[in-house]
Amino acid sequence: MLKYKADRRTLGIVATYFIIAITSWFMFDKVNYWLIGILMALNAVFAFFSAVIVHNTIHAPIFKSKRLNSIFQIILSLTYGHPVSAFEPGHNHSHHRSLSTPKDVMRPSKARFKLNFFNHLFFFFLVANTITKSEIAFVKKMYKEERNWFFQYLKEFIVVFGIKIILLIIDPVKAILLIIIPHFYAVWGIVSTNFWQHDGCDTSHPYNHSRNFKSKLLNFWTCNNGYHGMHHMNPGLHWSLLPAAHKEHLEPHLHPNLNLDSLFKHLWKATIYPGKRLDYLGNAVVFEKPIVPDEDWIEDIVIDKGKVSFSSR
Image 1 (cartoon, rainbow, N blue to C red):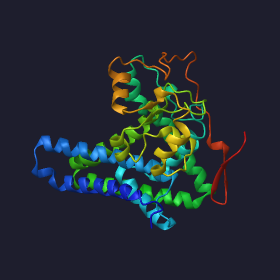
Image 2 (cartoon, helix red, strand yellow):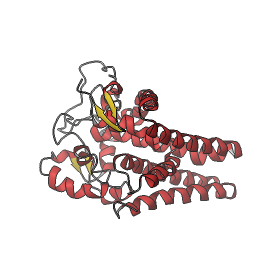
Image 3 (cartoon, one colour):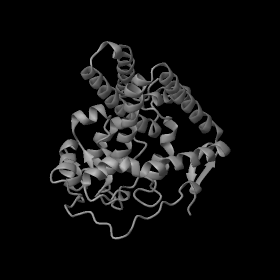
Image 4 (cartoon, rainbow, N blue to C red):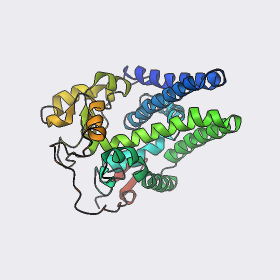
């Protein structure tokens, strides 16, 4: 059923999320506040891991069967609290195709706080409105031109928000602490990764456009999301193949400052001490111009027999 055996890990992480979430729900009234905090944290962490899987899935569906992929997307939507299909427009068609240009709704240049910690912390909130508008516009376009995509999105939307509403009615406190907040953390986390993966990089360079992290522990739980540069070079490449491709095709040409061992060490330096916003060469990131307004990328999309392509304009 699986295209790659490595996706047993994918299924294992998703199953772990549901085990933790369901167990937490039934344990909630029997444990103290400290344990509730631990359960919330576990839910949030595995919701984030699942959000990374959402990212992988919209690039490379894991099953050979289209029907199974459709069902899996509905199930996966429940792990991070939003339709999986909605990840496609802002990420695949805006971010990947137009990296750090005005048509990239998630470009780091939108964050310009003097304190770099705030750039990392609030990046999500700076781009969330544009992402939401893009999602709505894309859904409207697909409703008119590609109904199969639209109805898949609709199924995911109804299931996710229908279950959230039911859980809020049953027990609003548990729903907020164990479902809503962890899901928000997952969405905040997966969007925020765009900042530290690309801020201070040369996005016009064939190799130095992304920051990469080779930590085995990080890449085990995030299904090799640390190898971000290779992912941008070949978005459809399955995540299990990224380390080897990184070593062969990217690492020999990549600047050493973008080929890092530890994400947490980088974040400490970037946000805490010394907490400076530097490019990969060690120079201060400076923006000479005001923030450039977003440009409409949806008008470039051409739908032909269910396939998305782009006009040359």
